[in-house]
Image 1 (tube, one colour):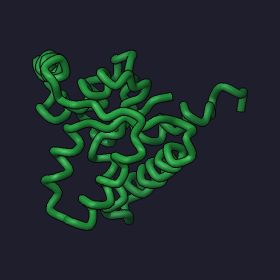
Image 2 (cartoon, rainbow, N blue to C red):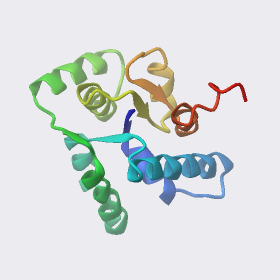
Image 3 (cartoon, rainbow, N blue to C red):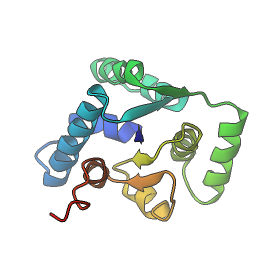
Length: 150
């Protein structure tokens, strides 16, 4: 299974962990990242992640996030076809970065697009491939929580 984590996922562990939702999402993201490290799923990276992360004001966070690039099975470059798809997605009401991330996930043939952005989740909930999901739901799919009758 191929997954794309948008930048909010990579930044979630640095957010205020006293909020229950943030803490649970962080735990799910860490587990997803462990699956990438153990080659249980493939990470898609993009030049959009590179660009957006380069603007992270916290150097330590920026450097830690950038290390995930080397574990990616594919790096999608924002070439004309990706930008064209992003424009189509932006026309449906997505923000510029969200559209570029989603277009990159599509170009990288991701099965799952993982985000903590509620607005993006609402707007793209009907998208079939990649499925746009919050971290906990993505983890449930990767671990087949609901497929074994439990």
